[in-house]
Image (tube, rainbow, N blue to C red; front, side):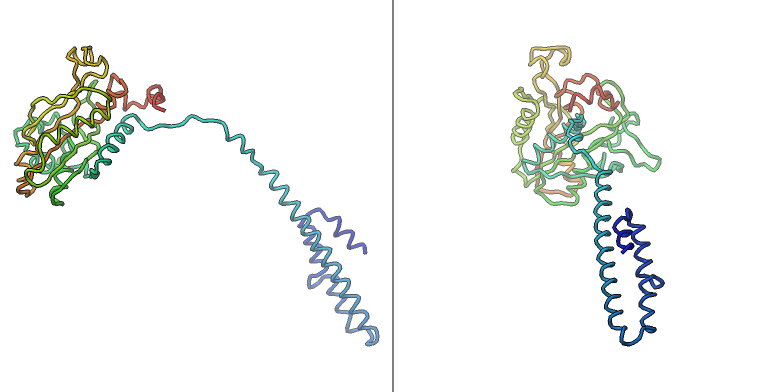
Length: 329
């Protein structure tokens, strides 16, 4: 049949659909032939119907075969047009890396988490009580000076340390407490070693009275500093902080000159790295604690990053200079 050749030579699904409708549609040629059955003499009707059904089946098979062929050809063409050579993506690209401050922060956090310290957080906009008063910082204390603190018109302020997190934790929990409070803090200062926004990690351990001593504090900080800086000497110098008594500043032997004395350590052989002490009783009184003891410590993450990576200017950590940041990939 001529129609079979036409089906066989059809080169698109759209044309094949037109042929199918022309044959099998309500107004198609097969429908017209089936309509002739009523006019066929009864003796010839059976043979006519049988031939018509055979023709219908033959045409349907031809359409189905061509449809599958064209559908397969269309899919193959689509796959070829959308082909992706995955080997092109095997080229090594430049890998990113953590910012040196965040890398240092994570190393500090990992150390204390391994010792079962929990990580606590708090608001960056604080009130006077949590940021100063509860920490035994009276109204006349220099840290309240407008040159140090960012104040808002309503009396609230940007926290100057993460110590308010310690206060909030103690007011919401009962001892024993073993926490670190990492986060951003804000002070009105900007030079080679200070920026208006920087990062601190502060720690607090509180337990029943008599269970916490300065010896505990000294041991854990010595081990921590040697974890961060390698084999360094560690010394504790008496100092003063309103929220701890006794208080100490902690030094390490200079990581640049190995304690021999250089410009970085002002030829002393020592570098100050953090402050610490036994929590002052007035702090416990402010949060309603009785018959407890504890120690606290605090450090600047940027200072640690500068010492660990020999970065001379703190401000360069916040300038987004790729020449500096690419060194930490």
